[in-house]
Amino acid sequence: MRVFFSYKFMLDYIIVGSGLAGIAFAETLFQNEKEFVVFDNNSQNSSKIAGGLYNPVILKRFSQVWNANQQLEIADKFYKTIEQKLNVQVDFKLPIYRKFFSIEEQNDWFSASDKPNLSPFLSTEIVHKKYTGIESPFGYGEVLHTGYVDTVVLLNRYHEFLKNLNLLDDNKFDYEKLQIFEDHIEYQNLKAKHIVFAEGFGMHSNPFFNYLPLDGTKGELFIIKSTGLDLDVIMNTSVFILPLGNHLYKVGATYNWNDKTATPTAEGKHELLERIKEILSCDFEIIEHSAGVRPTVKDRRPLLGTHSKHKNLHLLNGLGTRGVMLAPAMALDLYEFIENQKPLEKAIDIKRYEKLA
Image 1 (cartoon, helix red, strand yellow):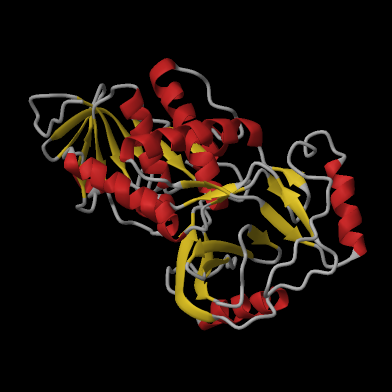
Image 2: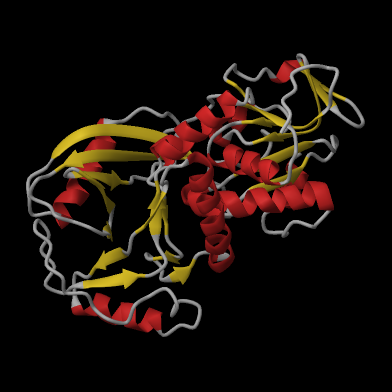
């Protein structure tokens, strides 16, 4: 790929935002030999503090995640490509165990596993493995085709990759300096055919798309250390417990729809501690407490599409709590929409909110 930072050349894209959505679109452009620049923007940090889990089943309601099969297939190929490109592992295949607290919960699990859309993902065998630090007389249910993406490693290494190619600008994007023309856009010393905004919750500062109903849901996480716990799978009950190695575990997450700051709180800490104590019977210490605002939408669908008046301004946002599953598929959908005029699903197209524009 050639690297241009001059008006002498026309880039294909400028990307604003370098979280999961931004780098997924950047990698899609790489694979299609497009020329682009990414602005870090630093508008939010939800991608870096995310749990990173991918799970095709909503366990609270025993329902399949929207388009789960397609998302998993695309994501698997995407992260394999990233790992080969960066020579680092970011995708860790681990089963998710749901702890049963009663016979009734076991029965609910078996009822759900009989559903045609859930049967490929819910094991019908109760797991009775003993884990030090967890008491579970009723056993566990195993969710299949699950794991987690180490989002910190992914983002740090991909940012480094982009910087080495002079494709990452870590200056804050200034919307007022964007000039929009019929067939291209200009920003400082750059020209491009298109610009894609992927700022996560930072979209609220974007004058072109801030009319969209991006709610934002704050989540808080712990990194804990416990030598009395020997977990080698992801435990998911009222919180998830994710083994990181060296007796460290990521634990989360809370859901707060009112607080829109990325600052850890005493309330969030208390809530996580109470939930952890419901699961663990061993001692632990908190090593790290972090928070971020997830880019969530009330109808639980992403926000993709093109500005109603400016045909070279596009959006990739609203990935919510399932960014690692959604980002590769949504980036591909937006690319095909822009480049090949492949229609977006109505459920994700921002046209569903055009009355708010």
